[in-house]
Image: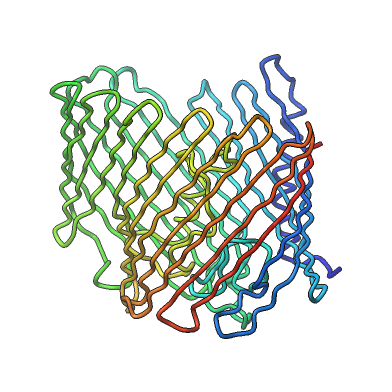
Length: 496
């Protein structure tokens, strides 16, 4: 086996840090209401793939069997004012065709503690996962293949949030988030990389003074936000700021009107995105009943508008609909940090996106890069839960205006998932997704179609077996972008 790389050593240092926090927590006196759960597990998989190297159409495809051993553990600790969770696993792949191996690390961790009568919240998030860096490079809905485009992304957030009251006149909130993103994609000497992505350090500073409980029909807020991303490569660092005074008038409990005035700016390098303007904001929120909540807000900057829309509708007790729209100037590093901050542990799906839906790391609309952008995005979600069945449907559309002399790009698509509890020991699930990407102003158009079916059987208290099928297809107007893969996997999972 090859010697441990510097990247692997760095990952193990981060994992050891979370384990140290775990040991410190266990050393505390344990109250009766505390929860401590520790599970050690192992997974053994055998996969047949008809395109091990993710070759494009027209090239020779190599099919073969891949063996995968995956040891891991997960820990959940919950005390009166502190919660800690970590889920780590290592994938060891052995390719029978040429006897080659590959090791991939994966981790998700959370830490939250409350101090000073819960006025101060200190939290941390950690994520280590594999992602396809270049959206036009190698791509698959399965893990059992080889691609130089798949790299390990390390993502870490640490934040502090202070909340307190100023008598009954006002509420004070102050926050700071420190983020780090690391990957091998910053190596300019690596000729196997088709795009590069900096290691980054990000800072997010917020402050808000808002009306207290003495105010009822009229509420006010003074706020400030500053964000900065420091990049290791040649692209300019990112920074953005927003300061505003805002009010809200509530004539009754069903409707409210928002208005405000402020300053918003950034350090964009192009005239089309450069901003340092005063703005007026206005909006409306409707809540005619407990099942419907709708809000809209616009910041009028003169040259362009920043809109925010949110709709939540509980159609029935089992069916929910959610729609959101936003416009923002941001960077890939901040997007990764925000995604990490929103994810949670969820009992049914594992790691979810903060709304209860599973995180699909293979569904990346755009390549990771150092070019900042203005993002116009729509997201819609429909969920339906029955006694033995659960469904979800998602759709989104995103347009990016890049802070560089390159054409805009946009993407739209959707996904659906279904799971059925056949009996207390057996489940079956299926997912499908479709995405269409318009790259370089539409000069290249890629269509992605993926699907998966998974059957799982509980054999005993400690063991589960499963059989799954995964399909991937990308069709492109560029002949070098067409590829497909079929993969069938059998796996056995043991929890000890």
